[in-house]
Length: 308
Image 1 (tube, one colour):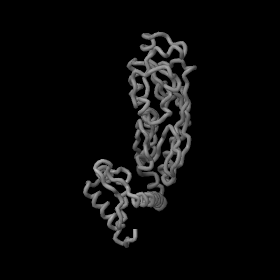
Image 2 (cartoon, rainbow, N blue to C red):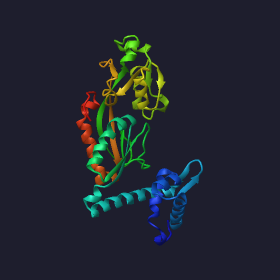
Image 3 (cartoon, one colour):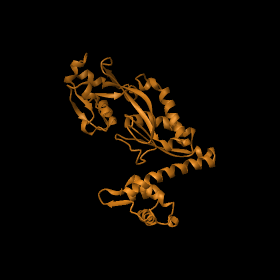
Image 4 (cartoon, helix red, strand yellow):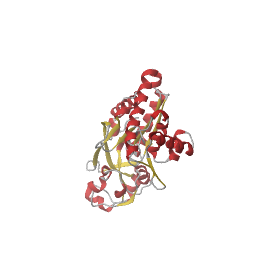
């Protein structure tokens, strides 16, 4: 990058960041509120100013960063975070308590616990808008798909701040109708003759979800889904036995615990975000809020129903 940077438009870096994260100029354009040709033109302008190719363009893979683009990405993200923090510092608490946050988390926890809690958060801080992404797959911080992530596993590496958010318990459930229509279950040895609902093993986004095959290796799931909410819905129709988080199933009187002393699984949720974002006031507010509400609702998460 030996060219004179006087021709560089620093605003082009905003377009560069969105394309780098989405790999699609059309998606970047939608996020930025412009059309596709504007994004393409701004990327071309940045490449001309720097005298280097930042993306390899392909119909199948979209915009893929070159080696030079990868180096620029790290610096551009650092500049972006520094700008956010500078704006907070010079603009006062009003700006610090405003802005946008995107939170990604697992599907069940996001839908049945985090979303109700976030409704209280945005009531308290109306100038902070929050996107909640309760998805049955891994969410990437490196691509800025979210600002904060709640996941089943701690990230192994990366520039992240991470904490253990909470433990939660899973139990075996069925409807009373299902139990009345099938042979009684007095021990785990009697489970082999029953129908189960579970995950699609080879499509599970985390090995932490494969508890059925580990806990009860001799049973087969006749109905499988990548979605815990789909499993929950199927169980309510009386289609079989299912292992579900207590925060989801214990609140539903239509479901009954089966072998509560024998089938008892504990897992953890981890919360993490990028180191640079963790210093932002709005991120700190939401981070601390989520930690507080999970602490207060520990009985619910561990299997004792409690109001949200």
